[in-house]
Length: 459
Ligand code: ARG
Image (cartoon, rainbow, N blue to C red; front, side):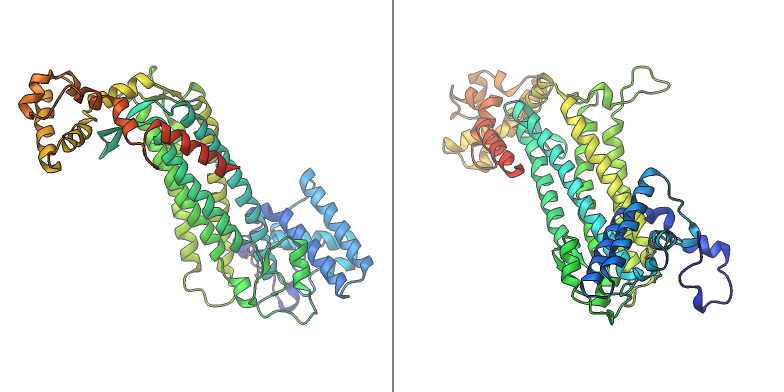
């Protein structure tokens, strides 16, 4: 095969071999092959439509490209570093296969608009598969939330027991965060799904291209409106990575809770043996490696966002080779997201919830103290005074190692004369959660309604 670079015409010396490897991207951009071929097929069809290629030439090119795709998939394609990138590798092989006609494919096109198109096509598909994996995770979260709609656990502020909440409600908080992430991907997709092709190197081209037709073939929502912008900006990749960074932040927070909850100190959940690993020295250990790793991998994605922002910063118009550095951070962001979502979605199904431990934590933390204060307010005491009274009652329980609901009525009366027999109902965990019965509240009734709405939003 002819491995001469297509741009050697104006050169008198060969490329330094280190420079050749240093400037090449084929080792990583070959991942784009399917989209490169897809873009080339659409471009060739459009060239035939406007009369730049004959139909016969177009069919030769399209068939040749399809065969090449097949070769790549069968592992019969030698990627050559001398041919720099995915685009030149495929084009050189096409010419090798079908002869001179292959050289016509690049008419009215540059690698600059070609690569921008390839990345957008690839990213569009990746957004779709990330979104469906995210939905699977959300769906599995809902399964547990539904099962645990009435399960009582301690809710926390400052990681100190605060008020009782239902575990279903707690999980729905995660659902809300993920739903916003899903919306952000959907929104980002609109700006990814615009076609740069036709911008050529930077200024457009002298051929009578029908860009709308190419866009239609490639199912782009629109055509980039300025050739200089189209070939140079990577803001769509930055936006995707920033949406990804926010999602990873959520996955990391969730991971942190799973790590805490599966510790002996909390003991709220069992993550399942197939999602944990052991220690090579301590035989008793069962470690929550999966959520820890997701928590750790979050740093990668934040780093990739910073890489891409910095890569773009200060670049003059239009295309600069700097942009070749967009791919590895983007690819790794995608791989990290897909892996993390898959493992979380799968892990959800095996989680065992230790309802008794959750309940015990809620009871031990004086989590119904606010309910007692609200009770006193209903009896005509100002909230600040009620707060003070309950504070003293809690102090008494701490000193006497008992729960609030174990105090006899006479003792309650020493804190406030207004306290009556009906206080005990207020102090129960069930009474506390079911009293918060409004939109967004933790009452089981509300959790069930929220689950119904959540299911609706996933369909
Ligand atoms: N491999 C290059 C990239 O990823 C393709 C575009 C090259 N364009 C150029 N003018 N050298 O950005």
